[in-house]
Length: 211
View (cartoon, rainbow, N blue to C red):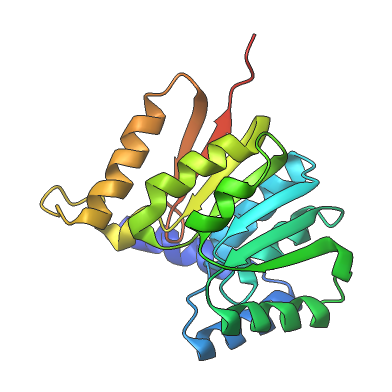
């Protein structure tokens, strides 16, 4: 356990967060909108850059930290971000403006993801990041896999649920949902899945194009 903690601490300290994202993080914490950690944000940026993402959907805006990381990795991308909290969306808008991200690169949608996602075009996005109500994580991931193109990626931060997923004694609904999501996607022939335990954890699911 000590070794794991040391690794986590080193990864956190070694990750250099751009100044504009650090400012957004400070504001997010003031609002109580828990942002993704810098190591998880950096992983999202690398995946966005590696896939040369141009169209990204974010389920759960927070105060803009994860969206800024995604656009840091792929500055030519257009981000559609969905959140039910107008205050959080307002903070994200300001963070994006402060970062001088062109207005055309970000679309902010106020609403519940369960109501917005069914209306979005399938197979139209390169990346879908799922960071909304944990109770709905399986539903949101199903939507995400529908929305991404063949070879697109769905990202799920916080998937270790603060360590609860690794504890076999924990059987609450949220922990069980995350545990089932990891196990089922690892066994699926429709995606290639990888689980990172840096930070709060990040599940990465890339769809396999049909032959």
